[in-house]
Amino acid sequence: MNLHEYQAKQLFEAYGIAVPRGKPASTGPAAAAAARELGGERWVVKAQVHSGGRGKAGGVILTGDLAEVESATTRLLGTRLVTHQSGGAGLPVDTVLVEEVRPLARELYLSALVDRGSARVIFMASAAGGMDIEDVAAKSPEQILTCKVDPAAGLQSYQVREMAFGLELAGDQILALNRIMSAMYRLLIDKDLSQIEINPLVVTADGELLALDAKINADDNALYAHPEIAELRDAAQEDPTETAAREHDLSYVTLNGTIGCMVNGAGLAMATLDVIKLHGGEPANFLDVGGGTTAAKVAEAFKLILSDPKVRAVLVNIFGGIVRCNLIAEGIIAAVKEVGVTIPVVVRLEGTNAEEGRRLLEASGLALTTATDLDDAANKAVEATR
Image (cartoon, rainbow, N blue to C red; front, side, top):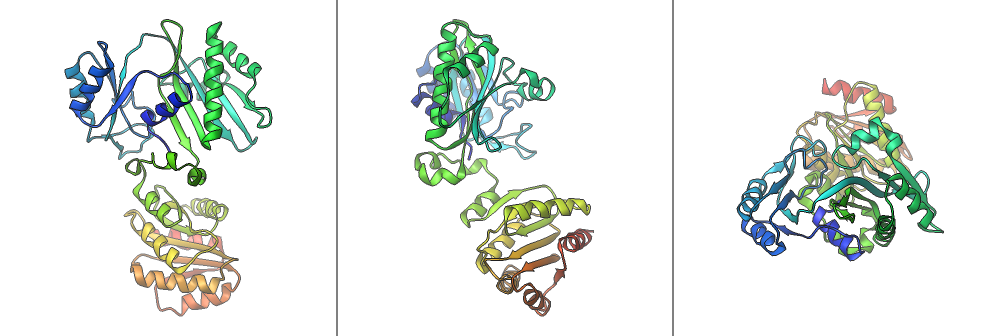
C-alpha cells in the first residue's frame, strides 16, 4: 500500500526527519490560505498521486504569489495526472501539497527497502539524485551506493559514514545523515514498511539536509497490526478491480492482455502467465484465488475477470489439494451459471479427484472446454481469442 507524499512526510516528522514546511489542501482557496499561513514569497504546489515523475508531467508547479497558488491548485484538482509510472489513464488529483520554497545546493537520493533475497534491509543512495535517478540506475549503476543492515546488529555508524563519504558529505552533514538513516530504519521496522524513498534528499544553501520528497510503501500483509497506517489508504489511487478483489480475499493484478486467468497458488499463477505468453497469448490479469477455494470465491473471481472489457477468453487452472477438484468443478459450474459467462472458458484441473471434476464440467451442458494439461489449456485459450 502506497502513501501520499504529505502522509509520508507526517510520519517523517514524527520520527525526526526534517522536511519543508507544508500543508495539504483540497480546494484553491484552502491552498492559498495554507500558503499565507506558511509565509514567504514563493511556494510549490504538488499534486498528490501515487506515482513518481510528477514534475515532468506538470504535477509540480512553482508559484510566486497567493493568486498563483490558488490558480495552480484549481488547475490540478479534478484532473488525472499521467506520468511514466501511472499508465495511460493517469491518477486522480484530489489533494495538493503546498510547501515553502528553500534555496538548494545539491540533490541526493536515499532509500531503504526490504531485500527478500538477502533477508536484510538495504539502504541505497546516490549523489545523482533528482528526477533522472532511474536513468542513473540504468546507465551508471556504479553511482548507486548500497549497504545491508544485519537485523541482529542494526544500522551501524560506520555504514552511515561510508554512505556519507560516497555522497560527498562532511562535518555536521554526516551527523544529519546518521539521524535521517537511523530514523528511516526505525520507521521501516516499527511500521512494517516495504520501502522508504527520499528523492531528492537535498542539501540546502545553508548546508542542511532536507527530505524534499517522500515515498512510503507499506506491507499489505502487516496492515492488520498497524490500523493507523491502514486508515491512510486512498482507494481512489488504486485499480478499482484490485480493490474489489481485496475485499473478497483474492490476489488480483490487472495486466494488458485478453486472456483472463483464474489460478490457485501464486507460483502456479506465474507459471500460467508464462505458458500463455509461450503460446502467443497475453494474460489480462494475475488472479490467485488461494488454496481454500469455494464456489462463492470462484463466482467473485469470474465477476472480476469479466469486468475487464479486454478479456476475450478465460483460463481456469486449478490444482486440487486442500480442496478436491470435483468441488472446484461444482463451483465453476455454479459460478458460470450465476455470472452468465458468454466468452470461451477453458478449464484445466489436476490433483485430487481431477477426473471426476472434468466429467462434471463436460456433463454440465455449459460452454466449458476441458484441457489435459497446462500447455493444452494455454493453447486452447489462445486459439479461443483468435
